Length: 89
Image 1 (cartoon, one colour):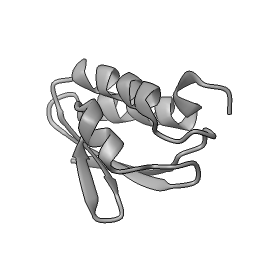
Image 2 (cartoon, rainbow, N blue to C red; image 1 turned 45 degrees about the vertical axis):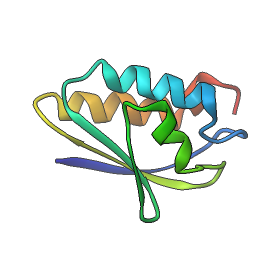
Image 3 (tube, one colour; image 1 turned 180 degrees about the vertical axis):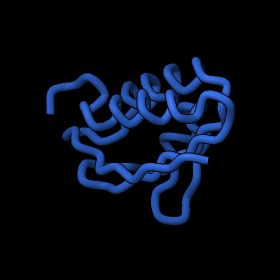
Image 4 (cartoon, rainbow, N blue to C red; image 1 turned 30 degrees about the horizontal axis):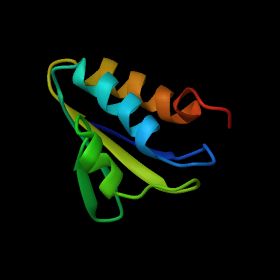
């Protein structure tokens, strides 16, 4: 299993559109993907679960990936978050 802690950089945090971008990208991988904030965990392939973690700007999240494409998946998803989900930072 691979993990990375990342700070949410964009002003709106992980809102509906950014959660959708994350879930869509996560769904393209075979690995199990989980996102956690504090002790709350969400399936990285579920928009609704991602929204339940309420990750505002400046929040630290942990992305955990386990499976056959875990390294590629973690790299791509980490990049997506670090770049503010493609939104203006």
